[in-house]
Image 1 (spheres, rainbow, N blue to C red):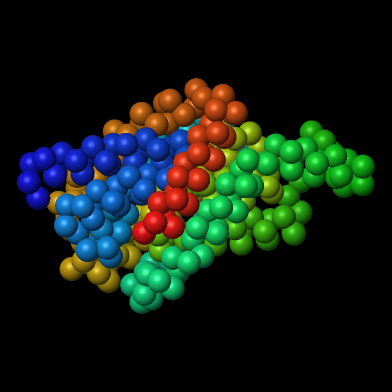
Image 2 (cartoon, rainbow, N blue to C red; image 1 turned 30 degrees about the vertical axis):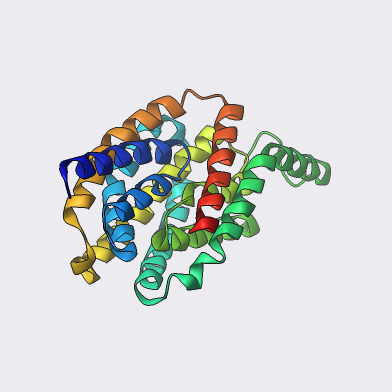
Amino acid sequence: MTGWEMLAVAAAGLVAGSINAVVGSGTLVTFPVLLAVGLPPVSATISNSLGLVAGNLTGAIGYRHELHGQRRLLLRLFPASVLGALTGAFLLLHLPASAFEAIVPVLVGLAVVLVAVQPWLQRAIARRREREGTVDPDEEDLGPARLAALVAGAYATGTYGGYFSASQGVLQIGIFGLLLRESLQRLNAIKNVLTLGVNTVAALAYVVVATDRVDWAAAGLVAGGSLIGGHVGATLGRRLPAPVLRSAIVLLGLTAIVVLLRR
């Protein structure tokens, strides 16, 4: 890479790290840049996943206050996300890209709809439970069915993230927002921790079984930029009002659909 190309990759990492901390579509920035500087698609995907782990870490740390009281839930969801990441990494290394590309825009589109209508859905579900007397309106009730759905959602989004991480966060917030009565910022905190786990495990799997496909210079540049970007994104994202944050998630989700359909 030339000096300008290295600068572009590092800058893309910074922007992606910021976006990932707030929404979770940073790969839409870094992936095209890595392709533009000459990396093959699989090498770009693997190197990008390695580099973005640093930003995932600073983003998760930045949202640590919103994680208060969610330790038990995360301990239940984290293993499912890790298993999903291993599944996704396996699929990336053994299946043609065309096997997954057709369904990705549909999944992201569904997630965007869920994020957009989440407040209405949560209120409707809460009113129904109160009428049925199945839950105290001031307490979060995680029955077996909802817990199973959350675990399945963590595994599914982990698989997606291990295969192709773009808009993983939009999917997670869409699914978890439907099943949990939590604020958008607290959902974002859950998303950041699970995404950190998914990307770390997937990256380690890539290093172990596909070392020859890693472009270490590109991964290092993305890591340096995303490390700073994750902190910046978390700092700014935590200050955004819920409607603004929700609009940003929906907008980037729609952008992701357009980009994926044009690939």
